Length: 205
Image (cartoon, rainbow, N blue to C red; front, side, top):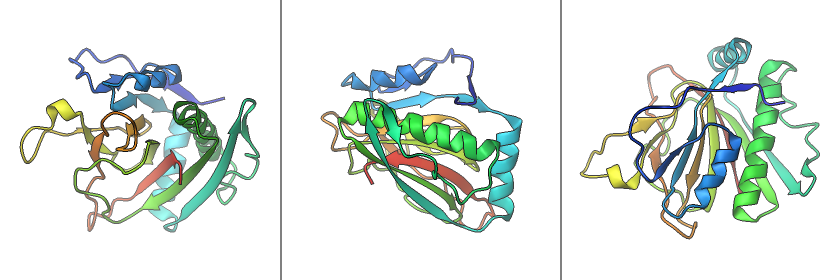
């Protein structure tokens, strides 16, 4: 079972390109051609947050990739998913989230093979505002600064105001291979700050 609680809905005006979800089912609103980004705000348990922060502070930099086959019965062969991590609340959370992300990604794209990538990021990457050359990506940051994004109607001028996902938030971003427009986003700049990110992404690999 996914160990999350939906955060209180925002009262701020919502741009048409940004969907603020209150649960996993709201990710389906990406089928709206106007939607570019789905943000599902969540609060992770203190145990999960503590384990994630400990990995970022003391663990080595790593990248784990798993191919996930999705069919009508769900995601298959998940027993060894992220088995390089010790058993505990964090690994359970990551496995549950990877399965949920993969099932939604598959249903939205019509593709049966998803790739889940878990990594500790300690350097700058993709820090320029861009849309990915893919169909769709789902992601979540478990420790460190979250992904920055901007709906296209707010992307005015050389340096538009950016929004930032919080730890635990699920974000789905359309890419330029989606039939409608892709979502503008970038990674936070952390080079030389001593900060690291624990990041899970699910896409086509």
